[in-house]
Image (cartoon, rainbow, N blue to C red; front, side, top):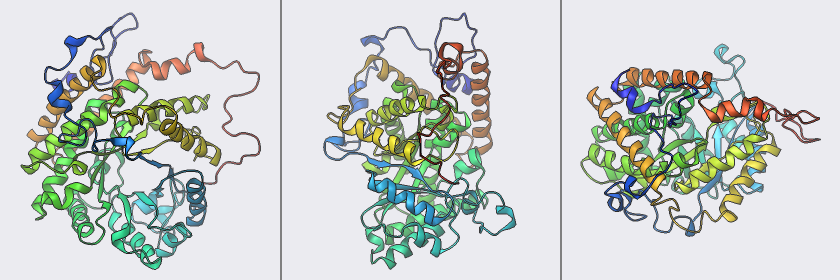
Length: 476
């Protein structure tokens, strides 16, 4: 096994092996003590709101302002998506997250022959300004922030959004939101790209410059590790490859003549929230620490707080089960709790029925109420960084940081993220294969236990149905 695989992928062990590993190959001890803490813990932690932002980007975090509560939504036509957006806002969502169908993501019109069977399927179809106008009818764009999960044609979709705002009388300077605009992860994990990397990255950095001049409150990119995780990478790989991509964007922007402070305050990161609470609960802090140091190194200076660690995790879809889907409600609560403990500034929570179809209104409402319960009933918003100093959590975070930094150095040796695309793809594929093999040997408890005879449902009625009486499934 290659050295990099040893650093970032769990070994496959037999059922009689008493050892336990994280998916990154970090062996978990039965008990953690003070000696397991990093020697420089106080320096690494720092203070909330200060470089390297390990404990959060604001001094008082949620005591001052809660994270943005979002639900990922968009399907079928623009009018149908508009109805769902209104529903979410009326039930407590404080921001919108717009899903686009695959033709839109690839810059294709709905009547293009290549779009057959995909129109409105994974998100809303936007072919023109009329569609964007319909999608946001009755929604004042100066009152809501909108996250747009769009990459290759991000500049075009943002322009349509800006024009709709103009029609509403909202100046571009008053618009708030995010375009994902992360094309590198498309070459690695999703495949929804239009242009070769060089030209595509130029479009990305052009958007940095445009928004600085015209839409200054807009987050111009959401550098995404989420999709790597869904493709099968480990936690260490997610941190390393996401930040490697971030370094590439920083270097490309500087190469295009931008100053760091012109664009860094509007960089954001999008990570994956897995079931293991302890790995996620400090991951945002670890990601912020490594990211701040990496971006400072890439730009030869320290960047602003927001530019270093605006973070948006989303619960992991690959952990959702179609069988006994109500169990997913518990999963999303744990994943959301861990994300908030880690200092997220924005959070999506999945509907429990998403392993079967687009979420019903019933499922979306439960997911949103989950965030509200976390915010107002769990106590997680009462203090900053509640897991700081934990023997186990700090030791685990330190090990993830160390291994991620080594993997970032490996990418740098290959010439950076753009030149290392094939290497990154192969590493993620190796990790995904490892997941499969560990599942086969019943070593991945979050998959194996819920499908084993120990949790087989013996209810007199089926637990597979995701809908309460009289609630119809949303049309896709």
